[in-house]
Image 1 (tube, one colour):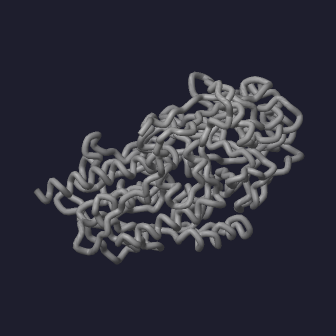
Image 2 (cartoon, one colour):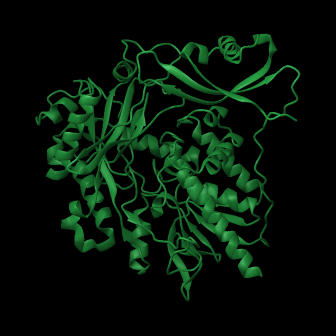
Image 3 (cartoon, one colour):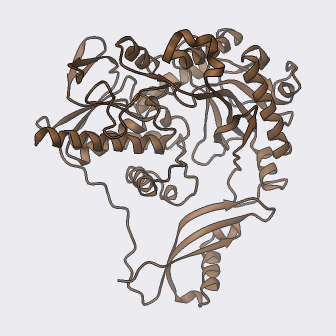
Length: 526
């Protein structure tokens, strides 16, 4: 059989979205009649919007008439049936790291026992509605805790800077196997959408259960069972015990009680840099006009996105988790705090665009919190979130300021329309953040407004606080075994351990930890 040929094309947005036009463009590039083309398919797609004439960059696989080519198919992952006689591993958390660790364990013939403090995806919706409408935060079921973790209801962006192409493709194919659109295998910045993720996550759960794995909701890790510096299992809900020689700890970056538990048990944790700031929102039409350099977004083009970074006083100020056509969500995990995040549906068709704008937080910003040792970043994070709660009248309303007023250091008498459902209240950001941080945010916005003319539009609004970009704590692990350096059989994993930053990197890390568990199982047996 012949190798599947490919070709790179640069075409107009209309051509990229109409098969007949694309076939004509392909035939012209190949210098053949279009009737000689038997089959073609886009396998990579990105947009070049640097110039007024916007171009789609495509990589196309094709087959000519008379060729003998086998088109590659997405192969279903081979999972093994497991039972109580199989080796067992406890997976703490059902976010991307935990779910993909569990699925990888199944493929290796190891029974995953997944424990999740929150509820299943459907039941979570009730608690999310209560945050938005009644300002009630359930500390065990919210935008961060529950089946699928924070990723389920916070957008589903699948872009990563990781260079592990083979691993990335494998993760994307697993999503497709469980119901995601095949477009995520094609797009340069793949995105599933919060409206579609719950069903995909539920399908993953069905796979786990059908092959003999277990998943337990409303089951919170409250202690570790350790003997002679080796993990033997966990205590859940303060009374029940589950035993296994391996525990993959994939609890996410907002499970603060895990850091407190580790610190209390004198199990080593470390402070690490993280980022904190605000979430900015614009009318999507305005971002389209700036990025596409036209009054109205041309047909066939998606809602425009942006990525911004600036150095202020030698430190980064940058956009994070940019959501075209999105919504700002209340993501507090404990009563008495205000936290924002953003998400988009699959069509990205809401009227607003939002993004985190954050600054790097390091030891220089944490001098007043040194007494908390490795928990100093976490304590600072809590401190800012509680200030927001107080400034918002002890509700889930978000402290807000018109961006133009923030730049000019004045309180907002008028707040632009906003997608944040609990509501907003006018507060000066200078009354929330320490001076060094607020100054860097202000200088960053001034620089961004020069890069993107109109970014400081009067209808732009900023909300506090965007504080859960990453974990302020790292749970260390050996670089080779991936086990905690002090506790044999404990595998810190994903964003909560400080080894990932997003759905894809967390999923890859989950699979890596599962593979290391398998190595331990083999060594034990032989």
